[in-house]
Length: 318
Ligand code: XMP
Image (tube, rainbow, N blue to C red):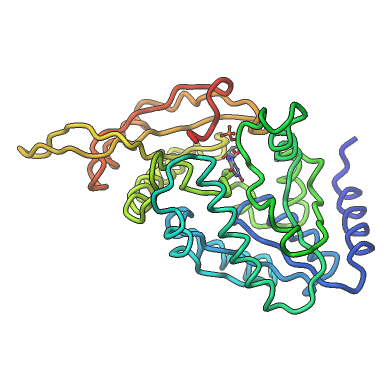
């Protein structure tokens, strides 16, 4: 029933027919969805697609450079990297509410993207890696009040840029997108990456997002990923990450009293992100994660494990 080759052929043909001799731009997030969407469009129109990869300062440790290299060298995409971290973090100062953070990030993203797109000359189409679950979770049939989180964080782009939307993955689920990516020969290290939210670490820092907190969370998060990979569990898990809590707790280091941040670890399995179960991570993996974070990340002195499933808890804390 699900036939990869025919999906790709017909998607590429549709895209080619719609774009004609014109040009398109695509915002890459570093994730699977936008990369597969871009790969399909690049297959259709080649270098008439320009990809923009914005560093919003909220990516994982080292991610901007790693992903940029992968997109350029392994996927051969026509991509420009834009270092805009300071601009996002400045705009986020003092913002604590989760949806307010998403709005700020969405607005700055649109501004940055618009400025960069303007440098490209005449472009008529915008490529987005929207999936089916994004569509239904953001545009609830029960009306805006039933929207749980505004996942569609680049929703303002087509209007401000006067671009026509190309969303080749709109009817697909994540596993189907990964399969298409494999079929197109995308690098496995990209395809197997865990989903990462558009607003990035901002929705994993509860309360105000500051450069210092981002740096703390990046270090804790890198340890979590490293240990889960080392245990050979990364590919069995939908998402695993650290969350920085706005709570301080008392600890003891040597014979000094400490009063520092608490961080929570979240690991879930899921089919499509709509429901999720917490992962029964082995105690020794949890132990190594906790010991390393507390030992290596100055500013965090306590680690907790999140044992909530979705529903009723969501995957992200915000
Ligand atoms: P929740 O937290 O709603 O997350 O259970 C479901 C999936 O969506 C991701 N997520 C987001 N992705 N922008 C995104 O692009 C967002 O604002 C956003 N919020 C959550 C989350 O990581 C999980 O995979």
